[in-house]
Every structure is written in structure tokens, then in C-alpha cells.
Image (cartoon, rainbow, N blue to C red; front, side):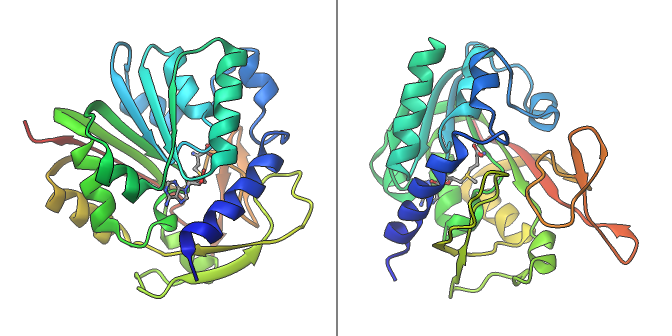
Amino acid sequence: MDYIKTNKASWDKRTGTHVTSKFYDVKGFLEGKCVLNSIELSELGDVSGKELLHLQCHFGLDTLSWARRGAVVTGVDLSSAAIAMANEIKAKAGLKATFICSDLYHYGAIANTAYDIVFTSYGVVCWLPCIKQWAEVVTKSLNPGGTFYMAEFHPVYDIAAGYSYFHNSQPDITAEGTYTENNSGEKSTFVTWTHPLSDVINALISAGIKIEQLNEYPYSPYNCFDGMEEREQGKFYISQAGHDIPLIYTIKGTKSA
Ligand SMILES: C[S@@+](CC[C@H](N)C(=O)[O-])C[C@H]1O[C@@H](n2cnc3c(N)ncnc32)[C@H](O)[C@@H]1O
């Protein structure tokens, strides 16, 4: 199966559903709402005046939220529908951003611009077969001394969802609807891989990122998995055998100068 073609079709289809969802709240964004979460806002900190590359930016709401906070932003995503929507929202919001439609690995092979910050978040590494190659794209895209930051769903959740914790070179092929509340139940097929925390960390270290911070959270800012319980506003938990499972991890690091 051509995973790029399959996943692009799935994300093109999801994008149409996502832009009209309460989950993404495009109307709220256009009225000025910041869609970034307290986790990345507090951990990444001030981005004003910084050149920021957002890998796997979907239809750009997070990217454009960083632009509102003063970053000079570029977003890359596989889905042409998502990138078209990102450009449309950018124009409506009167913001500046560059959006590039590309497979991440292809982008890494041809791009030669380096940024102050590389950012990626929430549902990204599972779409990529090779985590080492991903980490090399991250490093190549950073200026010496530049900051890498990611916030990602914790792979321990993969176990709860019936996937492997450890990486298999053979992908999981799933047919499912999407995660927004307006999901019609219509399924699309997609191809994913799990990447345990150690693989992600070791890939970044091998690619030349000095890791400064690794955090794990027992909640997700998104209500996107079955059985979540909102104990505090905007904090969704899942417990197993009476204990909270880790749902998010974040990594912050620097490219050696
Ligand atoms: C869950 S979304 C990212 C979430 C983002 N934080 C958001 O909700 O706005 C995953 C994104 O990865 C993109 N993607 C999947 N495979 C990719 C690839 N090989 N190269 C670049 N982008 C890819 C999809 O098109 C999708 O927009």
C-alpha cells in the first residue's frame, strides 16, 4: 500500500470535517481565540521575532496562533486540502505565514532553510515510518542553537487503544472515522506506526538535539479518545485499574551550536 497516497486521502477528507467542527472552532480562532494549549504556551515560551517551522501543521490554526504571538511562521503538511484551508484562514485572519504542501521526508530532502524554532504537536509521529529520518529533518531545519519543541500523545495510550507500544516496521492499517464531534461515522483508511518514547528521544539525540526537558502529563487538552473524563476544564483523563495513564509527553531541546 502506498502509505503517502492513503494518508493524504484520509487527511484531505478529514480536513473538510475538521474545519466545521466545534473541536477546531475556526470561528473562535477568527474572532481572536488562541488555540494553543497552556502546555506548549508555558513550555515553549516567548516566540516573538523568531522564525518558526511547524511540521505537520494540519490546516494551520496552531501555526497562525504562533504568528499572532509574533513568530514568523512556516507550516508544512502532507494534505493539500489542509494547506488550501490554512491559506484561506490566513487571509481571513489577516495574518502572515508560509504554508508548504509536502510529505515531511520529501520536505527534509529538498528544503534548505533553517529556523530558530521547530515545533510539532499532538498526533504527528504516528504518521511517519522512520523516526530517525524524522529527527534528521528536525535537526536539518534548525539553526545552530535553535530550539526543538514537541507535544505529543503518549505511546502508552497506544496500548489502551489496542496498538503495540513498541515499534513494528509493519504498519497498522485502520479504517475509522475522525476524532471531531461532527464525525459522520464515515470511515477512511489510514496507515500508522507507533514509536515508543525511547525511540523518539534516541533519534533526536543521535540527530544532534540536546534534550533539555521531557515532561509527561496525565491528561490531554483534547477530548479525542474514548472514555475520557474532564476533571478540570480542558483537561481530559483516562484511568486504568484506578490509575491515570500518561496521555501527553513533551520534549524541548536545542541543536548544538
Ligand atoms: C493530527 S494532525 C496534527 C495535529 C495538529 N496539531 C492539529 O490538530 O492542528 C496530523 C497531521 O499530519 C499530517 N501528515 C501525515 N503524514 C504526513 C507526512 N508524511 N508528511 C507531512 N505531514 C503529514 C496530516 O496531513 C495532518 O494534518
